[in-house]
Length: 406
Image: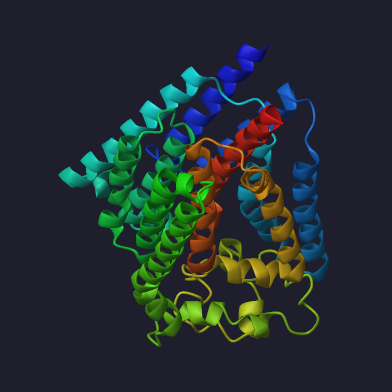
């Protein structure tokens, strides 16, 4: 039975990542959620407390939304499943205490590196539009955005299953990741690539010196770390400057939509600050498909890309949507979620336990990606499902490692 569970988990990861990246299929997130729920139910027989708490929080939000008539029931249901998916995937994967066997990880690593190489070939021969072109019609995302998202997800999974921690391997993965930057030339992906390079350099070069018992070496290493962080922040700000100007400061009718969407004080007035305006009411895809009356109240119905019948840019700022719909209660859930996901890593660092570098790097970069795309994009609900999958599996392995080392 144990061997069978390993095999099934291996199949779930391989099939779901293939569907999301190379397959570029819109239902890959739903497939992953269903398969993980079935896996946990069959092999663990019960769901852990974090899973139950996560589901209960969003179910209560859905009931609250229904009671205040934030939108029609179908819209609320669609929005519930959309927002819940990444967090549910994260806690489900984090609770899987039995990791894959070494041979399974090796096979996955080679397959995912092959997929990344395939993306490079597509880009080189001009086949990106042919392979990822349907995303433009379905989601409004250009083929190059989809290519970049696919490459980032594959990069994080290859880090998770990397069993040879040589610098050459990390250099290879960074070179393959650079496709995302070259292809889409988007500030957010450029920032992630810059941060990925800095994080890999830190854990591969500086981390051992930071832990050194020699005071002079430790001081020098810490100074270098501060310098790297400062350089990373400055580089990130410069790379993202154009996106910030375009999306938040521009008065052009095409880009001014995000400036309207982040105007949260107007959204949370009249007693909605604690629980928000309810699901499918603001900034989500469902609120545009089933046009929310809140947009009329706020005078947003005349904004390009936000008006009824053509609200194709309504899902353009994740954090504004999240806070606007869930209020301060949603922020409390964020604290709970990230505390649960990152506590094992923090305990290992605090106790100075020598963790595998790839697990630390995969965890840190998953958090960095989440921060970038929560603050500056509406893609967290889709691509974030697989990033949270990586974070959850990394958390599970770190927790197991912590238990074995005492």
